Image 1 (cartoon, one colour):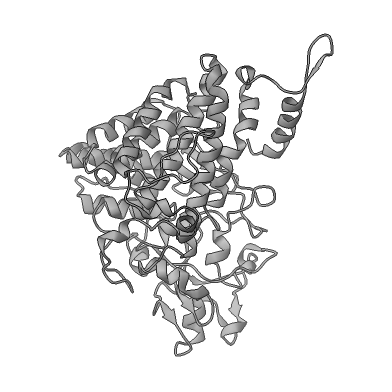
Image 2: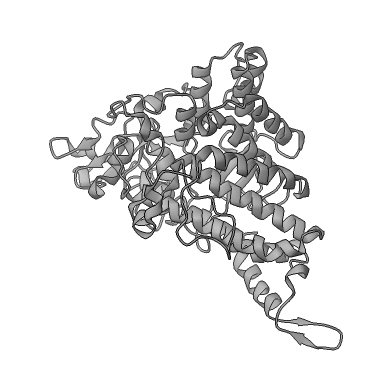
Length: 499
């Protein structure tokens, strides 16, 4: 599936000519005869998935899910990382509808919906053949996935399911109405999907996971809890029998992790062909290239909030996903920092302030904060990684199952699922005998860290607007982002109340 360019080239041939036994050429294959096989389906649907690769970079989605929370921060380091205040605005919940990350998501989500609608309309007349039914099922679930991201981040948005008849200036629809439409759109088509298969496209596990997420967050989306149905869809993923936990908690995040049995749905990345995964450049120190023998120098920005770092026990193997203390080159030599007068490069967990001006020492400015290496950085890594980014993975399913049980008053059953996830993170693990909602949220923070789940989790647990380090309490309206100003300028209907 990573060979998209090669497949796309094949697709151009398939779409432009067809040869029968009489060597008669046709300029197109009729819509009700195409796709004829999974390879052709992959070719045709590439544009539907393409926006995903922008979500970790300038698309803004990852930053809005992590930098708005109590896990990760990009402090201003003297003159570095001010960038007009856009990173601090996210962390302190002071964003506007022109803040870059907030404004960037909208276009990516709707671009995916536009491409899905186009193909759904093309293939719907041919529904009833196995290949078309499979294609339509994948497209409808993928369209719903983009709408899930839209209602999760923006609340009320336009719900457009037509390509040729789509209104030029659509109005917003209510979030709860969209939720019901999405569920009704997904559930009838799941039986057409494959079990297992590619982790880069829709399959049964991905569809059940999306339904589980929609019902897990139903209290927020529609004002009604749906814990029993969320549990049902978690059970559906588990019952497929194709996903298992890695023995190493950092196993799903290694370089070339596409074969991890834990990953259900992921975004493919490659250091050369499919770029966009450069979070390591944003967190590593300027001289950390010496640690990983990198041909490029990182940018020294992002770090772990100290309280989150301290939430891990010292013997928790997941803590190996952070860099702390004296740093060494790949051949074992201690690294120094010329920008700090040649001082040893020593990362400290404490970040003295969100804004570190020249009143702070160079060591504080340049070295404070544990750095993040949860996603493996191989020796010789470039400015883009070849690690796939998991959107859905099996550990999350087990923690979601635990949460649904806990919220239904079945704490004794819930703890067993949490122990399944935790036990691989410790040698000589002592199982938990009970768990509370607050403890489960903390465990989700440790397990799902850096994977763009924290904002949604904090909202669901009622803690997103709390005060934390260098961030005062915020108002409830901060639970969703405003529709970008550029979108309102193009469509004034978006400023009106939803239909």
